[in-house]
Amino acid sequence: MAHFAKINEDNIVVDVLVVADADEHRGQEFLADDLRLGGTWIQTSYNTVAGGHRLGGTPVRGNYAGVGLIYDPDLDAFYPPQPFPSWTLNESTFQWEAPVPKPDTTTGKYYDWIEDDGEWVEIVLEVTPGGTDDNPYPGDGNNPPFYQWNTETNEWDLVPE
Image 1 (spheres, rainbow, N blue to C red):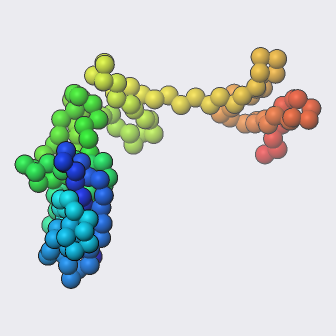
Image 2: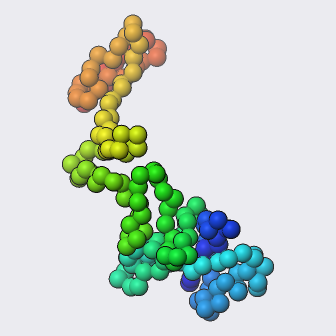
Image 3: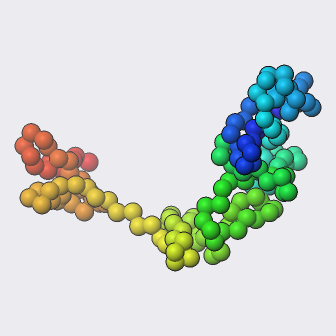
């Protein structure tokens, strides 16, 4: 089975359809004329990711086309829209890159790009266990013991370990 992406006049992918192997060689004609879907159809491969082929084969047009991706006829490649004005397209991987490399996320930390500052900022996840001013959560929310709100007594009950 072969996959073909339909692009609009702005080279944005608006649909992706599967074509039987017997019609792969004439996918554009088959989809536009035989099926009367019109438009421009360009072959894509779901095994192509970031300029490579997942199974070691030949990559087809940078990335597998998905709705909303851009087709660049000069590069003959599909890639996502530019996420931030300062980011540049890597024409080998067909992925956008920040002007500053992203910090290592294998440490369990998460980062978000702040365009106005031109930097990655660590996202700090805080547990907000709830409660009210009159009945604040009795623990820290990250370590035992844990509590749950009892709607019948309007108090915090200890959760058994």
